[in-house]
Image (cartoon, rainbow over all chains, first blue to last red; front, side, top):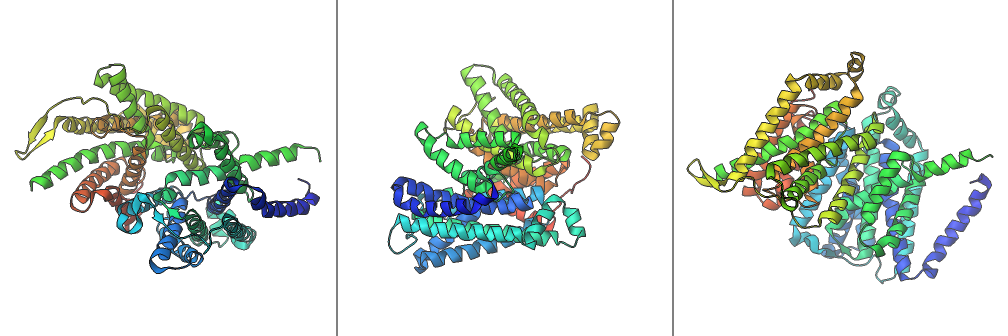
Length: 307
Length: 287
């Protein structure tokens, strides 16, 4: 896209997104809110996987932590959901720090294995401690706001999404972001330039877990029902597939991927429960033939055009 | 006392099968530095194949099991050639691809075979009176024997044969091995498929005892990974010891603590290993 169009395009986007809830029906509004949740999840996972090269499988688990902490706090201590979301973020950050300290030193494969095990174990605990978490029955929690309104929820989620995206933008453009990419490209070279590799990775891990905690808490209170499904590998897979299909390591990629897959899954739902399989096949094809994702394809096309 | 011995025997059986399945992961990690997240799905695939061949097509159980392992081996060759080969040197890409593959396979099984557990017929019937204390199913004893035999066979292949030598050469130094005339790509492809075949062997051995469903695969993969980390990445001997430890701990833990937390004990071991001795019991030595 030519540069001079960008401001106009941005204004159009903002106006469109603000008008959307008033034009869309109940159903598409719900889809839009889900999109926002997925954008938060995919973008924050991308911060970790795309920019520092650590494939964590615990992202959905951290969203689950946020949701359950906030939900349980609302039920047992009558904490308002928005404060609960902050508490959920804090707990997700703390757990992320613990898990990160444990496995980031070993890096690469160890991180992926440990995070996968962590997320499965968390699911087992929640399934088994049903007296406290209501297990697979699900935990009924209060709505985000005192009054029920989908439009308000949309704007609230939208604000949270903007905050997350803005934070990611700032981080990626800061020195820390440069350090992230340096660590991803060449650990040894980065270390030789005085970058503390473990600290940088840990920072990325904690920041991304915190964002997942926020997304999960808001999602739980929006749905008013929290089930162990949120910690499942299926949700993790959606987040991963959205990022990979959109384009890992790009800012826009996860957003495009999240919106694309969420709307696609709404359209193919009528043909039965094939959407997971289809997403998987698309993701495999993208990994194999276009590792840079949709954004990579787009950029290649733009570059090929005569300017 | 009687109970304890029974739990230990169960633990030994599971430990052997865990070791068998983990050897597949360890072999591939040692040679290609790739973790196959769809390991458990291949176990399940072999279970389904053996059930299908034995029940629907009426093959003898042994033939059905062998055929299932062979088919999974071929599938492994195909996966390596089409998906894994162009990710060499990029550990992250192979992680992502095998993870996506695992989800695709799980959902494909759900579509093809349905959510209900399926099991191939038992190889042998009846039970044996063990230690003069309890009766133990012959099928379980047979599984224990066959599992141990396959592990022994694998060790002979890796330590004694020409193929094993080339594999160890590639694991030690890929370029040097290529220099003296080993084809590293061929070795990779073959070892990846061999890793898949080991998962399949574990699958056909355990499927008559624990029927397969599309989602048991996650537990299978996780236990294999925990065993590999516990034994030390790339150490085959460590896998066997690690598998036995995990099998015993899981069975004793679920008997005396809580069966819902069966897989939790493995995670606890993983945490312990990562904090105390991240290289595992036997470190990363030569294969």
